[in-house]
Length: 171
Image 1 (tube, rainbow, N blue to C red):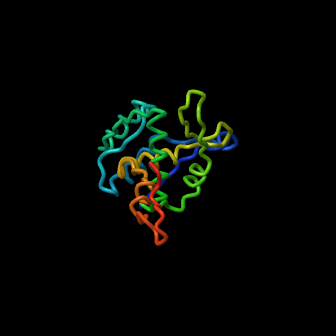
Image 2: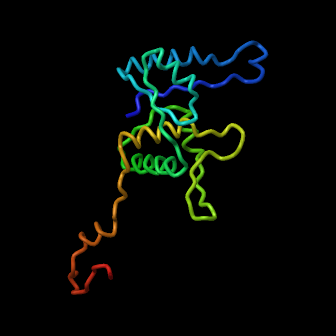
Image 3: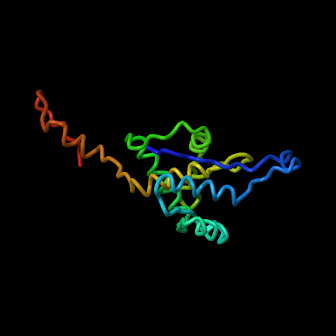
């Protein structure tokens, strides 16, 4: 069960005119408070996190661990999440942002045969929440092995049926 998801959204352009902006120090303080509530002392983030963020968390007594992200790793995390959800091993919170991000993901095969899973390239489409959830599940439930239905079915089929015919799959 994923217990807590939190999102900070930048204000719209019209809000900037009213003086409303995201305050990084305030957000880091809120994150540190949440992390301490869960009795954690460490956060993980990708290599796109700035050194200033690392230092800000350190001032709050939180260690920030950089996790190098790559397209294959991200795709593997998404596929692992999908398998874990199908196997009933993960229960997602009813969080509209995360659900929207997950439902919006697109899977494409590149001309080189590589699989790419990402948010569509259109305004307002993001995959931040989906990426966080998928990487968390990957860390806690490493690759959920696919089930080999051929082997399971082969072992469940009687070698010969009542009519004497051989029902085993051909090799």
